[in-house]
Length: 443
Image 1 (cartoon, helix red, strand yellow):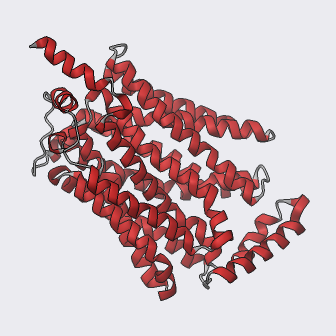
Image 2: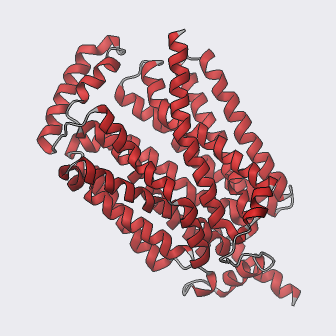
Image 3: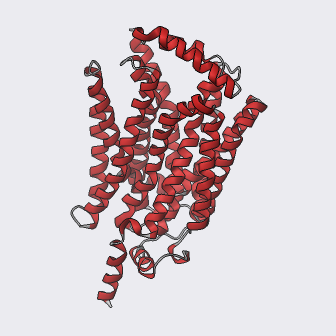
């Protein structure tokens, strides 16, 4: 009996990336890719949507001293192309700021209730509905822009709620699908889609706006999201025992590996115990700090390249994308390494989580602290930013996944709680960074 059980546990683990559970991780990777591209699309397209961007870009263009005339001529020509292929709007900088922030208004409302509902009823329909709503609304954003600022903002707020349904609800599915020794690799494969999406948008978004017009940025990435919905609803199931295509050996392996885990959701929440839980607070603080760094790099890396390194707009976009593609690769490799160390009993699971968190936080911070002393070297600066993103991605195999180890039964709710702290961090960090920059400039 014991021999048969051990064989059942070993067989599916040898299937590796060909298993159904890894197929689920790759489908979620596509879903996260779609959501990420939809989140970033407006940030790229708005430069072509607004007809007064030339005045806002001219101060930055003066930084590129050797090619000012060429840059101005190129921009004038590009503006004519934008007008020829798509409408533009008289949105003031204040209106643009509100529109860009409107996605976050929805995001702040949804994480905790979404995680709670997904944990009780399952992630399939919560995530699928969120992806479908966000993708369809992305297709309708050009019409919303034509209808006016208010309808456009309403669409974006609803889209923000729908996107949170995907980013929060998906973690409930790993409670039933991820064996403890594979939890890091499965979640990091899925999560890497977000960084891949940012990379693709930064590389391709501007080219799409220039070549065929800004509406097609929304049409293309919204269409990709709709295609992902077909995969999701047809191939994803809340539990292995309900999946029609999974092998008996893999099903037995997953169920036996989770047999000792109290993962059955409940309507009740031990709020008092959660408030008193020091490990939970440690994870929350880690989330807050990690997203502070991520949000700062998202907001200011292009500005750093254009102002400090005096790169042109095109090169700034390409260079800003490099840390995200390397972070995507290291995210997956970190998950594989973390599970290798724990599954082979080289390190205890708690040691793996602490080690990866320490490396991810400390080394990425040290690398960023070196930046001011090497700003004269273009290649060194790029290398340090890439290294910082690579080290930081290890946190996803450390503290950022630790909540599934602590309380898998309430994984969806805890993920929503942590995302709220992450959004708060993301809202504060760019503002605080801007304040520090202004103080340094003034002195």
